[in-house]
Image (cartoon, rainbow, N blue to C red; front, side, top):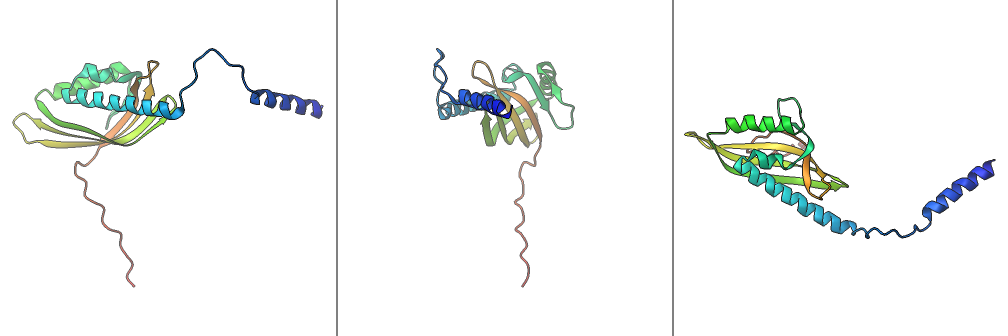
Length: 179
């Protein structure tokens, strides 16, 4: 009985390792080529995000999201789906009616592609000037999960951010023990 079971296992392993018959599908591109294309497509997403944020264009921002987006803004419940996220932006857009957006920059410290998902973390810095008031600097820590769409585009699938001090003081040097 053990010999028969061993024969079945060896047969399964041998058939899995045997060369597969050629199929009529096109050959896959080398992984490095796909990574370069993914990185370019993700950078295009970043540039569209920056332009839409500077213009405070809700429709263009919504177009950057996967249909199942979940956002976790500071001091808020998770926003699940496009409708909840659009409503959040519309509310904030109303509050920004008399504010000039002077700059909006994204700095991604890491972007890692894993299959149809990419993970990134970094910061977003902005300068705004409310009407008749002094310019204000804003900064946020951000983590996002991006999802590859069937057409090859990348969209924001999950995002979370929190406030970050605009100008962080350098860390004090480590204390050295006295001899």
